[in-house]
Length: 181
Image 1 (cartoon, one colour):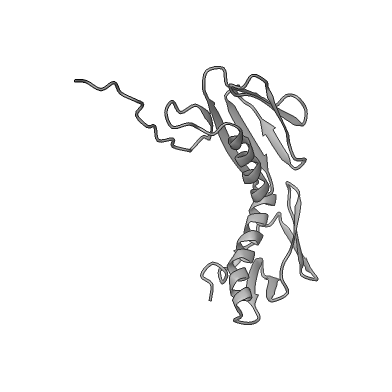
Image 2: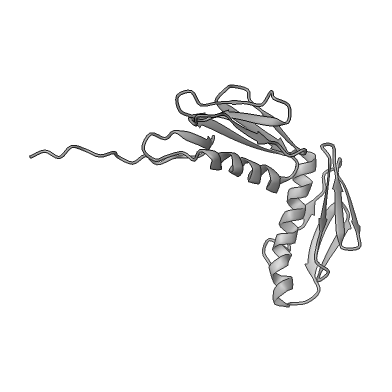
């Protein structure tokens, strides 16, 4: 039995879950999310808990058991609390500006500014010119979009310049040294 898959998920009082024809819909104060799960799994919603179980011991059912439970848990957390990623820009003249409507403007050392279009379900704020805060209800979308922003200018190991997560640790390398005779 899957260690993660057999744990029940507690449903907060402000979250509503509906299971219909292998499609689960989770609604909360921040929005709603839907997920189609495989028919080899059973999802039981009762007594303020969600329990994911599998019908057989086939390899596919065992693989999807813990995954489905984690995805449903992430949906419940997303519609009740939301997800947030913080990023910082390190480098002289590196700035970010989210006041351009649905776009994020980045000046990160290129000869031109970089514009990134934001998905509809994600909110981007720039409290300071060197900070980016990405919030949303879908954990995968928030993580994927922040990874896409980081990909534009990854932190380099010699000076540490680039776009990084606020809790990321960049290991610096020693540069070239002049050999002594």
